[in-house]
Image (cartoon, rainbow, N blue to C red; front, side, top):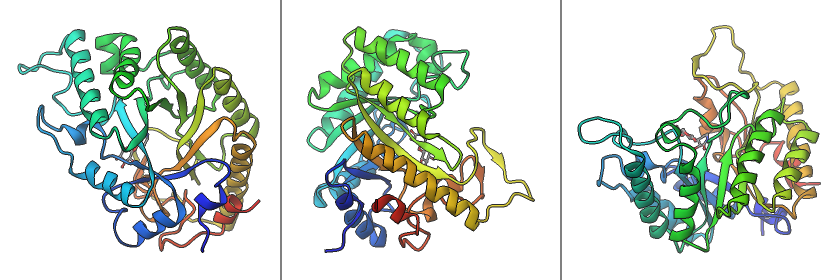
Length: 334
Ligand code: XIL
């Protein structure tokens, strides 16, 4: 038998990957079932995909991903139930285009969560219930989103309560990025501590882990895992990729002189970073109950388009021909 990532990590944690309807067909499909034992739908379970028009549902893509997972005996992480992005345009307004009330929005959230969670109850073992609620600005707490504007902080509590009612057995995660940066980590910690104190049914915290060869540093990563675990929460790495560029958020055009060559020096830095983070994951396996990569290969990483359109990136363990890269072995062998 040829071993895959899931086999190397058999005694540690499930190893997952984000998929779309394209990656569950053909060569990528066989790679996925060989290497991974968990999947996350990259987009197919987001609100804008599931209910693009009010009361008009599009289950096709999500259903086909769930069928693929069942056929290949893969775990499924549901992603996600409440976020400030990729929402349908009708969600926050009434038929006349006026902003809806808090009651109406929470009713919509409840109906959505019940509908989606119930549909995939026998398949999805964990949900990202609330995604990215903390602001990027370190002087602010919650992000200035429509959810926050209309509902105040209550939308977070409510989302978890509804998800737990819909499926009491599902693991429920709060998921965010840059969780290892001290100022953001402290704000995520504060949010989660508050949820725990109120008895809100949150079981874990997802660190998206859209990282780079420059961050996080080992001590930042270790401190983050230990702090979150100290709240009695499970920790998952939910959207792992290691960009060869420093982190950026705003979309922009590629500069004409911007170099996106995957040099030997960058490969060496990336190899060291991949080795370090998996050393840490193994060290803290008692707290970590899943590690998921965001996309299968460098061919279709979302980072080839975001935040810089057309700038090639090389963040994953498989190259554009779906072959294992040298860096694969920094993860699979120790
Ligand atoms: C990304 C997808 O990968 C892209 O295909 C899509 O265009 C935008 O969303 N944080 C998340 C994910 O929680 O849902 C995002 O996925 C990446 C950042």
